Image (cartoon, rainbow, N blue to C red; front, side, top):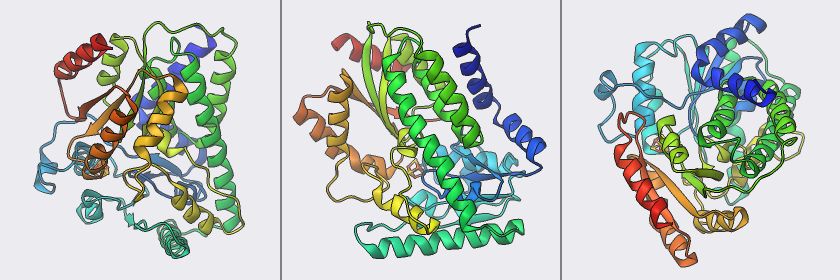
Length: 372
Ligand code: SF4
């Protein structure tokens, strides 16, 4: 097995068994884990506690009990998170941090009935002016104070600033990884690319950075060869389950860039420099661009994707529309107009984490590829 294969297998093992990754962390550090729900949360404050921030993005699970608390038209991520929460999957977590960027998440803290205490905070809607930063600093102060109370510790500014350094380095390395993955699509098929990115949700970011750096160094020893298939860009909340990515792979579609909330949106912008760590985190929210959850009246997302398509020589943009996600649905008609105006081929597919069959998507992707 080559070094690249070994590293990819390690990332895969983490994604397949996050519980083991969490247990290993506990055994190594004597500290527990803290859950972080989508999409944006001040993970650096969590990291500064010494606990492991763990991304909670749902998964494939039949829904039964969650239907008691959520309407049938709630997105499938939240349906599955709630189902697992009721099943006790998250009971080991020392706390759970929840932001409130959409209607489904706004009331999620109240629905959380498990053993882990909930810390819910709000993002400012209007991010254009300084009051937004003042507001967000206060919100993050609230998150910090609650964590201190739950864990019985003090979180210093120094610890948060250090955590920001660790996260900013991981973000820079992940941006580099995405560039490298675009150069070596024969190595990073859609599933493997996703696996490397997803593993950062369950690993200590410093450890993840180290392994991704190793991976990049190893891959770059290989020569770049022209890719025979088509190149695509993904946009949306997420491109899961893996069976969906397998369909792309089946038709030789290489993901050369993404604008997924679960992937690149997590590391597109760094936390800016400064001395007050909470203010720095607040400023980062102001810098978030082209995301359905971060209000921007100029609607730059479609144009951003068009430019991305030109930059990476992509043949098409695939919109991974999370079923029943209002913020994404509101963005779509504007994006579509911008794609059409720029002559960019595009396809919208529906994402449902609970879906058992990929046949409909396979047929649509197949026809789309044939048209290309
Ligand atoms: S997928 Fe959409 S609706 Fe669901 S929690 Fe995320 S933003 Fe909200």
